[in-house]
Image (cartoon, rainbow over all chains, first blue to last red; front, side):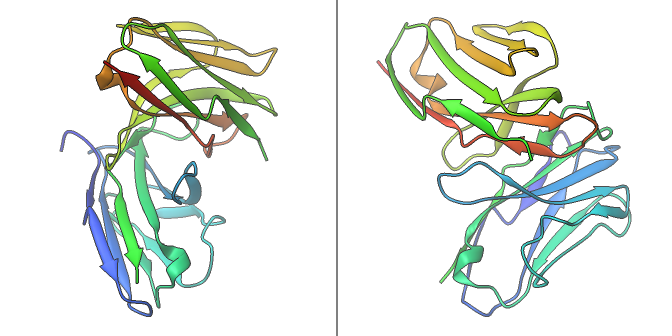
Length: 114
Length: 109
């Protein structure tokens, strides 16, 4: 597609429910990033893929968070047993390469855990 | 870890005013993004720069690597410029972006 596409745009989950957030990067973009943006804050790094390889997952806040990109294109961020503190906007970004290449961001998924 | 500070946090301007948003960071970088985020919307990259100055329409971005400082200027501001503007930096040799908290701009007709 023309840009980075994320779905769903909005998700309301009951505490304890599992959720899956999808990111379709720009075709041909090697690098894919997930960020978490709490209300009123700047985004915080979660994880980074280069093609299908998850090279950095140091930002994932707990083992309830899991991300995959099995074929090097679409990525899914899964959150198990959601908690209220997981409520945030989850942003996906892709770029042609790693350092020095501009990042293109998706619209984000706003997750609200009730 | 790089600390990215933006000022002001909030800015209200009259339509037509010249606007400046500032960004400073604590550690050397390879490049800096200026990003725009509308309410309920995603993030759009306005500029990526590593030196000097870039201009696109009414937007101008400058960076001073020695002073670890960048500015985003908007000339002849318009209500449609109302958004949150975020500064984000790539650390030297890093693929990770570190973000500022953003500057919320409101342009009043």
